[in-house]
Length: 342
Image (spheres, rainbow, N blue to C red):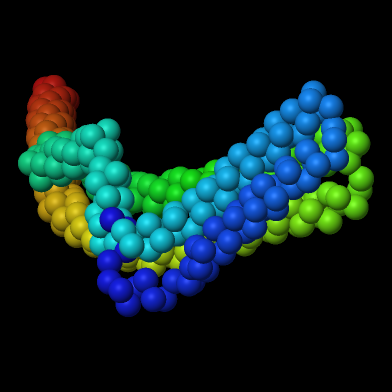
């Protein structure tokens, strides 16, 4: 069922009286039936009279088919109005939108996000370094957006199912409408065939011309009526699925909005984990830098001590050399003085 309450059905275009098609069909049949004896009264040859009777029967059958076909459109509208249920249609669309493939994509995207977030949360930023932390965060953020995309794709599938369902129903309307129009045209064709058979049998135009015009007019009227009913049926379908569309859009928007909110929360979790890992990486980097500076300072200090020790040794050596030379000079001077005195 596609549409529920009587109030809903009251809002749809009203169905013309079905007896209109019955009246048209009966009128044509009566005209044909009344014309057959008239043809026999003209004294036609048996073969021509048999052809007239066959043409008349073919026309009667064509009129019956056209009348049933046109009534079929009216029956379609009545059945649609009676069985239509918006809630049931929406539920069917939801069921039709379910896809194991799309559900698998959502599941895979969710698992990818959870795994990438766990890797980011448990990374040792001090050992991995800022670049590695940034790469893990980018991967986790991309996975979070992937979950949103997969979930919204599933919501979009609801819209596609709705469109396919409406188009399928409209195709049914076009089929029954086309069938009715073809049947009405066939009735016109058979009416002309009957006219030709009577003329070939020698009947005067005064005997059948007015009847033919009535038969032709009746069949053409059925064709026009079929077009009007087809248009009315299409309007019934569009009105109904227009209301279903509102529910589909509302639900699809809810799903996507929830997916976007979840993605925003996921990205917040990624940034928080990235912040902790990045802080650890910066701390480790600062410690390594401090240790490096301390090592450089210590090496510089040690180098300075060595240079000081060497400079001291050189000064001592020079002082020693100077003292030795002075003593030598003094001894030489004293020896020379002594030698002069002698």
